[in-house]
Length: 290
Image 1 (cartoon, helix red, strand yellow):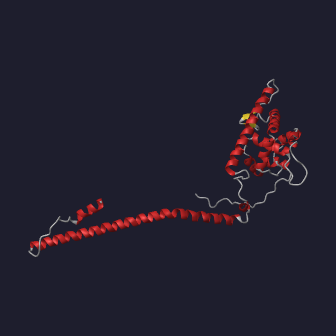
Image 2 (cartoon, rainbow, N blue to C red):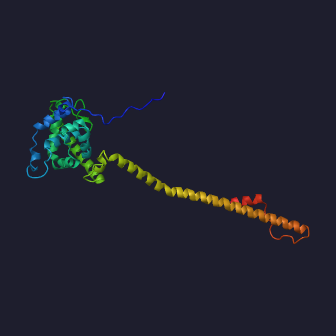
Image 3 (cartoon, helix red, strand yellow):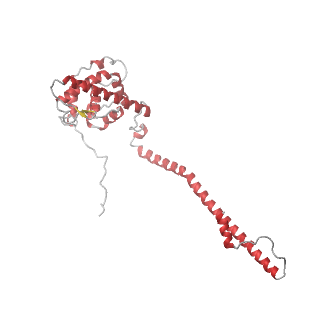
């Protein structure tokens, strides 16, 4: 039995998100823990090379960028372009950046300019996350390895291991960004459509026009193939015509030879000379073989 109809799609349906971001995520979510920890960290190393005041657009808060990097890297996201996208589509990332998403160039540049400081503070956050039990339940992991938390004599050794893992993560993020820069260009994010395609009022017409152009291109690309097929059919028809003409000529020569023999037998002319033509049934075989 077939369904009578499809489920209705209504992407214009209006929804009312809670106006308070605190309602977007549960209170025990890692993001709230992370933001509170970052607020207590010493970020003076970031402030030293940042210019404040003067003209121009205001820069992003380094605490936000630090929290964004730590949250992304702790959850397996290395690409700055991917982090940029998540700041617009993922609720937790939207909370971290307070709905003011930085572009991938800003994210990558902050990491590159502050690698040592980011690594050091990242380790501190992971240690505290482990103590809070987040690592034990797999909420926070580095390279798939959960972070154990205890107060044993191996604490220093654990910190050294975390530092190694964080350094590896930072290097991996750098490689990912460099590879994407080489592939797409430093300012480009391939997951974002061009500005003229982003306007919902003109996008349907652009899509229709693009599909029409694609169909025309496909027709143009297929034209040589159709021409070759037509030429092949023409060749077959010409060959069939040549065979038919050769067949008719052979039959005509055979009949003329037979008539000349009959006239010679009746004393009405000389006997035919030369090789005797083959009957039509033999001539067809000869033409096909050629």
